[in-house]
Length: 301
Image (cartoon, rainbow, N blue to C red; front, side, top):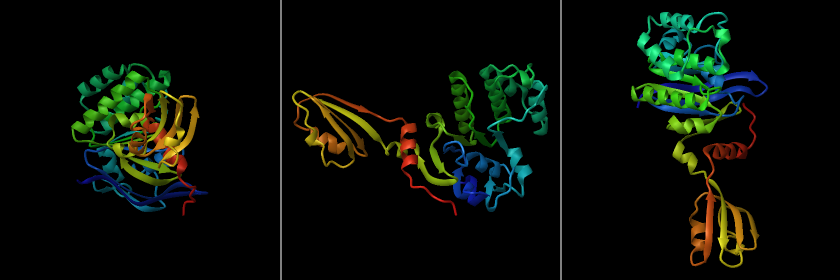
């Protein structure tokens, strides 16, 4: 598939190990890609480079084949962009802001604007300074989606939204994908990307440490297992098994952490009288945090 977003050795070095370093990434046309990492990992720096808002120290980025720096005006025409924080529009009313951005794009279908505002329950008659944090995020969603862009770049888009509006945002993302758009969505909350993303990239201290499909991340499972025996606990069944950690026993019950495949545990239990077996699956958030924390410290070059 054609790459809608592509970076080659993209670097923005702020010094002191801060910034983005040697990012090589491709996002295919029509893909919803999650870009994940804690605050300060380099997500917003990446997005500003893609948008041509800051200049890289070295390397290159392109969107739909257009260089993000040399052809930044053309790139911006193709993109629906939602920044982490909207500019301060002061006393302008929501309808004036939407009208201004619509005019910059050569006009926007007002039926589309009405549809999105109704779905998000956004009052465009209020002044920007009167908006709550959640309503400012809703306005940002409207500005990003209202012109049906070919590429959407969303920086922490669900931050500040209530659960119902988060679900409406996810619906808009799925609809955009169904219409052929590419979506690049940054987040530090993995439960968000589980709803809409096909692949995720994990960024840590300015470096991309992994790109994987969601099901691949789930394979990095770490389960907390509780086994209750009819008779006395038998912790010896699990000693020495691959991936077994934190083994504890108390009367009839054995608890432990199991990494990777569950098959060795199932084999060990065969033929034993087990009253109850509980395996607590981690959320993708837990998987991510485990992966993130397990990585050795790196000093960017």
